[in-house]
Image (cartoon, rainbow, N blue to C red; front, side, top):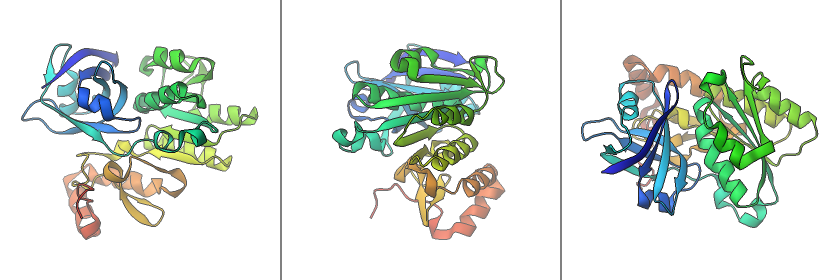
Length: 293
């Protein structure tokens, strides 16, 4: 059993829980995820790690309520326990695995939107702790849907830029408008990391790539079972078939076919669509666990 040490609603439909999971906290890195099962009869839900504390042995998960299973997890309060948490899964951010001497030479532009704000945070925090320069652009629909503002202010300070679609708080506009402003000011970036809704990542990547900035996107929005077996997170990267949960979730944005991925997501939502994709894709429909020969 995995005890919840703190549970809170960050906004109307997004909750955050700090969970006691020492072994996961000891080995996880930014960019990775866990699979959570509320009780022994519950569905397995993949959730990106939005923070961790090795000394306290805790991991933080952030969840948007979009269905019965996510609602069940969100209803768990401080003092309750989850039946299972498996992880860390997926590949860590390349920032954490590349030689640190090389990473410290880079200036990184982080772009987060909506729920994607949460998995951006551990990467920003890691950069601050390891002496890597960065700016952070966070976008949300309105002030009421903003999450983790204090955490970003504490770790990023004047390098934190916030925008709302409706202009109800701070800058008015999409994340791309702030990106354009920063680039126009002459700020140089060696890498852009964008995490959020698919449509946001598509246009954020279009903006950064047009400015000659190598760009990484996290394809965690398309994961369902988190093991590669369901085939939900299948996508085309360059000329190769990849699976976000076992090959990612982060990929080179210049090689991701966002349009086909979004169309595939829409199809996968229906039983008929899933059957069609399975028949069309044949042996490449799922990627196994990623560890089988």
